[in-house]
Amino acid sequence: MAKPRSAAAAAAAAAKAPAAAPPKTVHSALVTYASMLSLLSLCPPFVILLWYTMVHADGSVVRAYEHLREHGVLEGLKAIWPMPTMVAWKIIFGFGLFEAALQLLLPGKRFEGPVSPSGNVPVYKANGLQAYAVTLITYLSLWWFGIFNPAIVYDHLGEIYSALVFGSFVFCIFLYIKGHLAPSSSDSGSSGNVIIDFYWGMELYPRIGKHFDIKVFTNCRFGMMSWAVLAVTYCIKQYEMNGRVADSMLVNTALMLIYVTKFFWWESGYWCTMDIAHDRAGFYICWGCLVWVPSIYTSPGMYLVNHPVNLGPQLALSILLAGILCIYINYDCDRQRQEFRRTNGKCSIWGKAPSKTTNGETKSSLLLTSGWWGLSRHFHYVPEILSAFFWTVPALFDHFLPYFYVIFLTILLFDRAKRDDDRCSSKYGKYWKMYCNKVPCRD
Image (tube, rainbow, N blue to C red; front, top):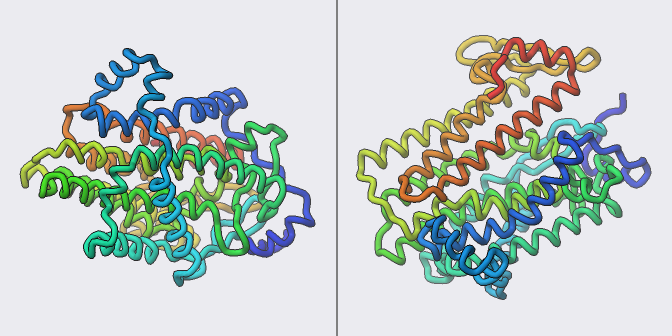
């Protein structure tokens, strides 16, 4: 067996070696086409419609529906769809360039990701937590010293989302062309179908140069970082509008920031997950991180800007503590698995040696079957969904729309659990069935 190579060495070898055959799509071609068409035709207008409903229709789905019924769907969307402005483009490019610079320039420990299907070992610089701290400190300092008012971001939010919708589509075309003409490693290849290549992606680890990892940028430094920045933005906007921040907004903002802080604390662990180690850089994941995360994931806070709710100290504190507990359990699930893998099973889980099973004959892969992972095969999704519920519930129940993200996340994670199980079943066969017998509950 060839010795695993670094991502840089693999990039040099890519030109000499034939492109690796892409993995089989986990869904049928029909499902892939349907989801592709749904993303292209439904998700972009939904992002704009959600913004319009939250900001201009009092959060009421009924009012938004009446607008579309009165003007017709196409004319109604055209009437509310803001065109990208120069201010919007400046905000997007300013933020993107700032995060790209932090990704490249801030110091960080060397981290090696899991061995890829082609035998490559991607190498990262783990500086996400530093970038996160610098971003928030810089953003708040610009506001505090009167250099930049974050309320401007909120005031131009529709234009920003519109620009992201179009700009991210162009960026995905760039990824498709790059995958054909200049792949960064041997972990790339074409399925022979243009739609599938564009949708699922052609490269597993696309990079610009030797060190700028595109998926780390789109998923982490733009998508997740914008989540935190927008959470702070909504809080500041409500303060400027009302002269105070409601306890509901404080709970929402605190829980979102704690969750994003947890993410960047654990960022190197994320580089070992399905998003990075298995899903290629295509429209499905990159458009989602560049557009869907800043719009949909932050939507409960967007709603609260114009709908401050006074929870009272007892209820606010109860929701906050419940949310923190869920975020901690989600983190501890990932920590247990990461420690188990790092020590090759020679660690302590809940005070005792872990229970485990082995996948494969020629290559051994240990699977944890105790701790949180003895409860179900994807137990970490449960506290993640509950965390989303707890930072949404401060909005209470006057309107349905703030809970769209919780519903979407539940569907997304159930689909991801199924895709992960199907992939493992195909890869490990009878050994995966043995594991499922030990941990029969999937979610």
